[in-house]
Amino acid sequence: MKNNEAGVQKDKKEFHFELESRKKAVCEFQAVIYKLLPNSISSDIFAMALHEIIMNAAEHGNQLNPEKEIDIDLKITGEYIAAVVKDQGTGFNWRQKISQNFDIGRDSERGRGIMMTDRGCDSFYYNQKGNKAYLLKKINL
Image 1: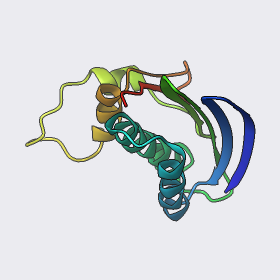
Image 2: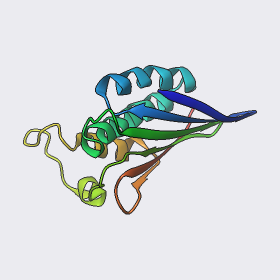
Image 3: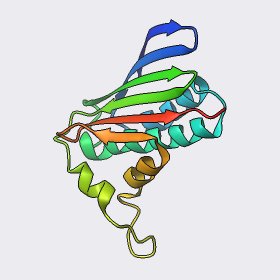
Image 4: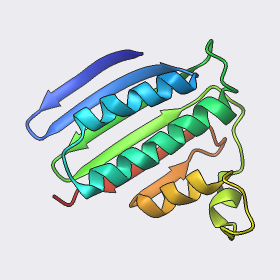
């Protein structure tokens, strides 16, 4: 994992990370995120949502190919947490995934992560191609 701290101002921190597309790297990154985020329920929800999107980028976008990286930009202010997650995959129809009805008794675990992220973030969307996710969560301390 490469980490470049882009800038630090009072109440504002920006980071850039490059992760290998391996499950172990994604899980290890989760610990880094928890250390950076403020201690709040909002932060915990955001960390869970971010983990889901990064894992999707590794598994589905980059097909767990360690040669392909996941780029993560993280911004933390006193008011919100924002992240941009980009994989090197071909993308997907994310609007269809978010809008589908989900029956927990009928459907498998596949697809739950995107729907949980959508409900857990104040703003969540992908670029047109579907390989770059944008997440935003207001912080309630």
